[in-house]
Amino acid sequence: MHSLSLLLACVVATGGLARTATAQPARFLVPERAPGARWLKGNTHAHTTNSDGDTAPDEVARWYKSRKYDFLVLSDHNVFTDPATLASLMDSTFLLIPGEEVTTAFQKAAVHVNALAITRVIAAPRDSTLLGTVQKTVDAIRADHAVPHINHPNFLWSIDTATLFRVKNDRLLEIFNGHPTVHNIGGGDWPGMEDAWDALLTRGKKIYGIAVDDAHHFQGEFAKARANPGRGWVVVRARSRDTREIVTALDEGRFYASTGPVIDAITVTESELSVTITRTGDFKYTTQFVGADGEILATDKSLTPSYRLRGPETYVRVRVVDSSGATAWLQPVFTTRYRERPTP
Image (cartoon, rainbow, N blue to C red; front, side, top):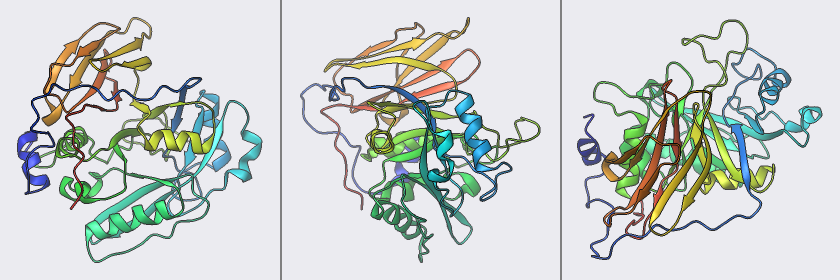
């Protein structure tokens, strides 16, 4: 079951892989240029004493601001923490984006979906099925013109890959969550989140992977068994430090996720994908270019890794691992052979 081919068989029973039958070689779909855009670092999942965190909202915000984050979402469970109440902390260097972790359940499964850029509390829905519960939550968030991201599917082994595939109108999925009990790498017969991400992409679900803290513990010891901040983040390519600009960039995949490595540039032409890594100290880096089925297409150990299309690819994504084991995940770059499949 750790084999992606077996995992793909479990996603849906119909059809083949999301590839066309054309004999034409693939070309990358080159994203539009965004003059004036810059990288903005942020965290979209953090808790305060307004739900189950150990620190007040103003102190949580100060923790991130003092560490040069550009933006933060306070995502308390079924609570709207209005950034207007913390206006004194916001300036030209730091933005608070209104959010909520919409928290519900189906039987023993935890259904947690973050809502980014909300205007009000999103009521937690219920349904008679797991899929219905997830879908109603996503729909409720979209109805407020907010952006959803599905949180830690492996927490309590709650949301399987087949269910994730069938959810509609979602674009963001946590592939790394810093909480110690969410099982990012899977186990037994349950896939890790990177395997699940590739399964979804390969089947034709266009979705982007995010990394978050899910921070609860700002006081006391910083340790592996505690949900401390600073473990996972996103770096968004945006023209300004503006709420709508940032959440739209996330929803459109204009960002990378990281637990450590810093990316300076990502360049896409019709035939080549190249990356520039910012070196930290004396760290070394290994970059893997990953395609459909989770296949490793190439490995590069330079600070300027690149991949040239060979012809059959449907998407290529990039994983950068530094010599401490920390990872950056770039969003998939799709080719002309990729076909987004309508969900059942």
